[in-house]
Amino acid sequence: MVRALLIRGMLVGLVAGLLVFAFGRLAGEPQVDRAIAFETAMDAAKAKADMAKGMPGMAPEPEIVSREVQASLGLFTGVVVYSAAFGGLFALVFAVAYGRIGNLRPRAVSALLALGGFLVLYIVPNLKYPANPPSVGDPETIGLRTSLYFSMILISVAATVLAVVAQRRLAPRLDGWSATLLAAAGYLAVIVGADFLLPAINEVPDGFPAVLLWRFRMASLGMQAVMWATIGLLFGALTERAMAARFRLSPQGLMQPFVR
Image (tube, rainbow, N blue to C red):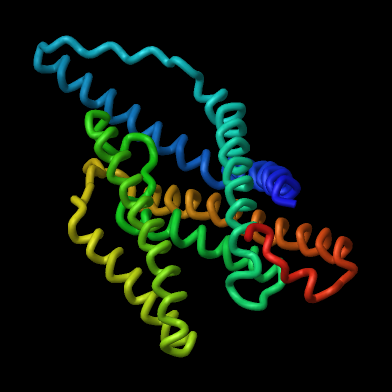
């Protein structure tokens, strides 16, 4: 059964990837083009100023992959592989969580897991280190910025696991609502602490359009929202339908965990 879920999750991820690609082409790529145009204008102004001072201008770096390929085949490959991988991981998490987080049907479990993944893996890390378009960020600090961003993801995931364990241990002593609130408070405390301890990164160049930065980040948010919503809703619908057929609509059968 887990194998069937894994295959279904990856197929759903492929569908999500196609939708993300379409959204990215419409909402994200125009912002990237504008950011590249800003960077090109800044480089031209700098070269002109250097020439006025008698300094040799720097030759433009060769374009390894054309912008047209990046915005089409490159974007398509990246989002489809990314979404399919997350679809497979989502299916494995679903197999472990189903039947263990309350008397919920597959659609509800899938929707909750997708919402949790969206918050834990994207929203929380991006509150500290939001997505930036080209021309924003020093190339020499890209390694540091990447490490910090993934550190925030790991902290968010670890805090989530600890919160789930704490909720399950507190539930027998307290009522479920109180245990959940305390676990959520602990998660927030860890995230707030990490936000204060990890260094801030602000490398937006002077003169960069604030509207462009905002639109790029909203496009990035939208792409993630499309992926998680598609995976959560479509995977849940397909899984509930398959399970209903297998267990002949038996509520007892539908609630059997996949991993014991």
